[in-house]
Length: 256
Image (tube, rainbow, N blue to C red; front, side, top):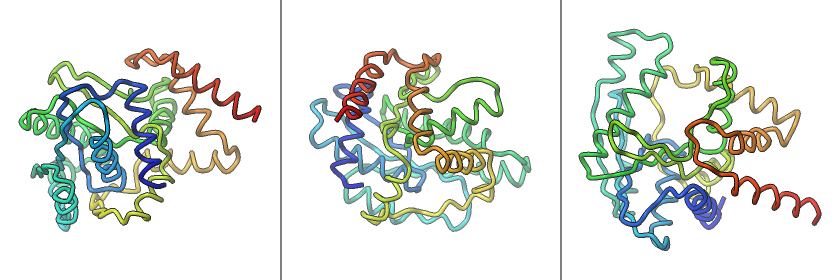
C-alpha cells in the first residue's frame, strides 16, 4: 500500500464518522507495532492537507518488559516533529509476577488505556487515536460472538464520560495485509512486542479462524465488516447514509 492510498482510506473514515474537528489535539497511542506506526504516518500526512487544523502528539505506555527499545520510534517522531512521551509503568510485573494472570489481556488493556488516557489529558489532548484496522473490527466481533454470545464490535469513535476524551479509530477501512505491505515498503521502525502472552491469546485464535474462513470464502471478511457497520450496534453513530452509499458503489462496480 502506497502513502496516497493510506491517506485516502484514512480521510474517508475520518470524514464518514466525523472523527476530527477544528482545533483538536490528538494523542496517538504508539505500541511500537506496525499498526500504530502506520496510524502515525496516516495522521501526520492528513495533518498537512486536512481542511480542519489539528495537532498531534504521540504516547507510548511502556509495560516494563526488558529489551523494549523505543529509540527508532523516537527518531521517527522527531522526523515528523511530533512530540513523543513514554510512560514507564510496572504493568508487566503486576500481570505476570505479582498476579500471575493466566489470561492477562483484558486487565492489561484496561491498565494501558488508563495510563494512556491520563497522559493524553496531561498533554492537553481532547482525543486519543487507536490503530485498530478492519481486521481488528471483524476479529472483535467474532470474539464477542464466540465468547460473550452477543453481536458487538468497537465503534469508530467513542466518547469517554469519565475523562471527557473521545477515542477515534481512523484505520478501520484498512486491511491488515495492506498495513503489512506498508510496513515493508516504507521500512517502519517496528519494535518487537516482548509480552510473554503474545501469540497465545483468544484474539490470535480468532485471527487464525478468520484466515481459514477467507481461504474458503474470499468475501467473508468484507461481508462481516459490512454486517458490523450496518448492524446498528449500541454506541455506534448513525451511519445509514454511509452504508447505502457503499452498497450503491458495490452495485455499480458489479454492473461495470
